Image 1 (cartoon, rainbow, N blue to C red):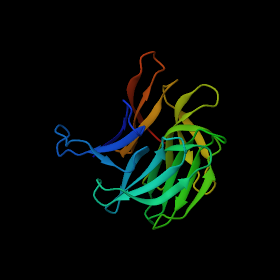
Image 2: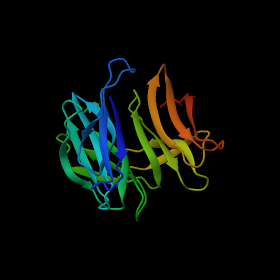
Image 3: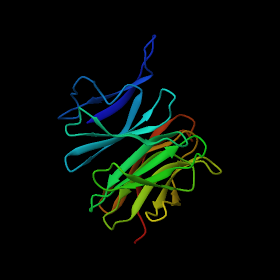
Image 4: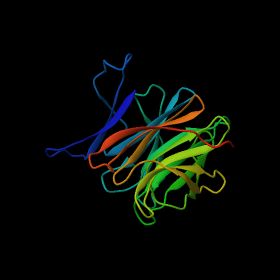
Length: 222
């Protein structure tokens, strides 16, 4: 399953439309089909117990995020029309714990511009938000087998970089522990736990030409 937002031009009534494509072999793909609402950029999609969840952010100027869900990955229905409005929320990452609790790491670019960590229980219509204490870009999260929560984000304090950080679920704070080779426009990681290593794909422009990088990280014990 592949999702992407298309930028609409030539006098279109809207700015963006999110599309989905499917493949059985990774080579041959279905034609793109629109999902969600126009001018809502559905960011990452996370499947949980047969349901796909995605947070879409408004690109028309209203600056809010909306929570969607789908049973087939094709027809997305609104779960929470305005999940968060303060501070220009946009990019996000959702994960689910063994107890079905949902966590959402959310980027903000307004005032305030610090990220948010949201927590909700089924049916995910009521969320509690905590400030992560720093500005973040391109957020992604992963729950490790031992229960620890890890994030990969772009950080802006000092030299811009892509880093790994621990997430404190109780306070919502992020603690940076590993800078990846990076700089400038970067982040937007993929995270996989495999063979007791954290595998990270991300892009960066620190070597002049923007490139995609792949890292394997050995994490300290719990």
